[in-house]
Image 1 (cartoon, one colour):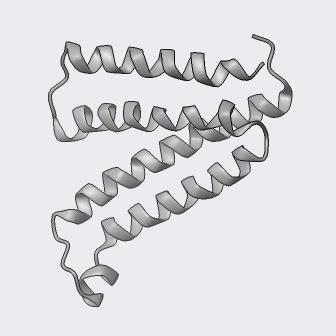
Image 2: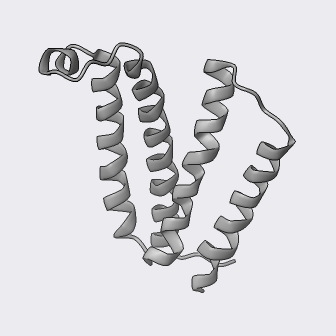
Length: 120
């Protein structure tokens, strides 16, 4: 597949976007442990604030990435967030990793290739 320089840049930005979003979710999980729905509980919940920061950076990267190519080619890369979150969940929280999750990761990669690569 011959990708333009702009589209390659967009793909790189999308991958970075998904990494930042996944780390944002990690910190949301840490923040959820001590979350209370009041102003003080939010403002002093540092993991939650770090999660918002990562999500914000991920959103900015998404905006810049979408300027580089077609929405239908770039947006499927968002599914990589599921892969990163799974890896983080296994590494940090020692969640289970089984053959169904491996199959899901493979399907995600095929989906990204088939949908994202179908624009050319």
